[in-house]
Length: 383
Ligand SMILES: NC(=[NH2+])NCCC[C@H](N)C(=O)O
Image (tube, rainbow, N blue to C red; front, side):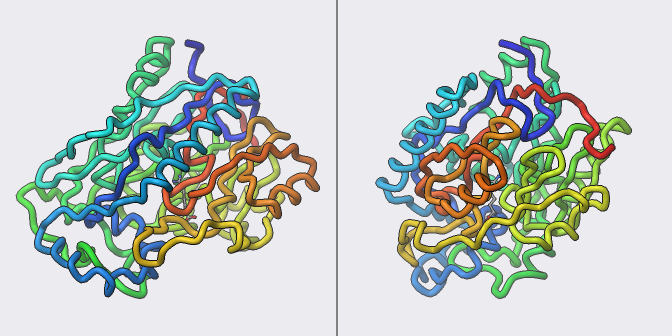
């Protein structure tokens, strides 16, 4: 195994981990899930269609089944993504697949059904030669990085540093609700009301939670999205851990959590951004970069889902979540022709890749991958 080296999202990609969609059967709609996906779920009208789910408020686990056809199609698309990357000469590593009959996992005072290591950008941050497992905010994802342990072990054996941020207990009282309160139209819903935390003997107060996908990596500069106190504590940990070598730029509420469908760096000096206002939310030294803004998403390019049965977890801007193979080559959803054309006009080579159910499973190509070796170094892109 060569050495872990990944400082950015755009220098030539040599090795990557591609997530696994195997056995993605459903979601446990507990308080941690409802809160994390609040922005996309708040408009979801199932609260009156599924009164039976109010049972969850009494402490039952409620699971939400994903239609087998969608899970199968997702699995096909993810396997094809891995094959495309391998075809481009990138060494592809994979997590362990979630077993078909995975038993629920348990923490102190809770249990949740695990989901596969699919959106692997979320729970790990690669900074140079260091693997940092970040503290999950969703209970069902608590052990997700264990499915990556064989790959991480191989990198560790080849000299990587391997760190785990403090693990949260994830009781109801661990969560800062302020972002959801400030932005929501309704709180709670069909399952567990997020603004009615139940006391637990394991309560430790508001905890550190930060996903790798809240961090944009640019060599020695990191842009970290902070939307509430859980994130602020995670960002503070990162600053103390990294010391003075890195410049950590906190941005306030660019998104509810992940920023990789808001802004991605395509090459030094060029961002892909959801809208031009992103520029003003970025740290001052990055406002002079060029911001490429794709055309508004075309609703006709998404599969038609059932309003009541299919949980839509992402915004229609999810196709902005591209993956760069180098400073000229970008993997783009084949349905997103507007974005592909624009990137071609800008001088990029576009590799179209199929990904049908990006709205059901929370991510696009950037979310589903974790680049472990690129040629770029600990560079200063601001000077
Ligand atoms: N790393 C990820 N899972 N990113 C996905 C972010 C999706 C974002 N919440 C949206 O609705 O567009």
